[in-house]
Length: 184
Image (cartoon, rainbow, N blue to C red; front, side, top):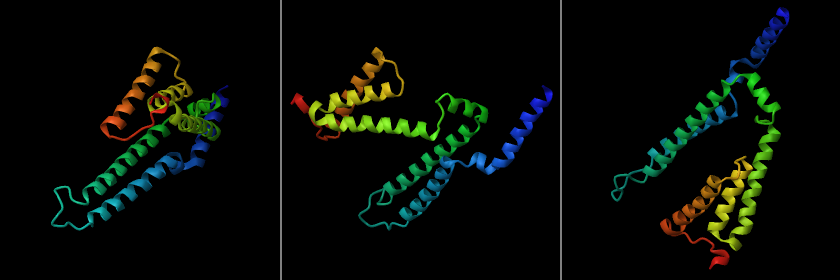
């Protein structure tokens, strides 16, 4: 038995050396985060080059582009931090999650994305008939059920209040006309 534990440790060390420190920490989220931080920095310097005019206010023509650049860099930093935290999970734990279907294998990710896309398409098909409030409530209900939330009063209340909230936000606050459906 002791030689089996030694063999497992040797194999683990060999696998770590094969992956190397860069491969262990440089996943697609880390690479995307670094790329987007560089892109945000370039965008910021380009926005900084926008000339000031005599008609500009305190914010200036460059204010919003700079805000977008800083936001992009901030969210990219969050993506990098999430990548680093996720990579700290042991490989044994990750393999167990993938084996149980809870991990992030490619087929699992594609299936989840395709399911959410189908819910979005169904929303687009019914919104003109059922109206915005009802369609959003049904969209939220379907998404919650698809993500594994059990049917409960809390879930139904979330869907109804979410539909009302988004209707108030878009129709009243932003004055964006939304389809009333059969309710008009």
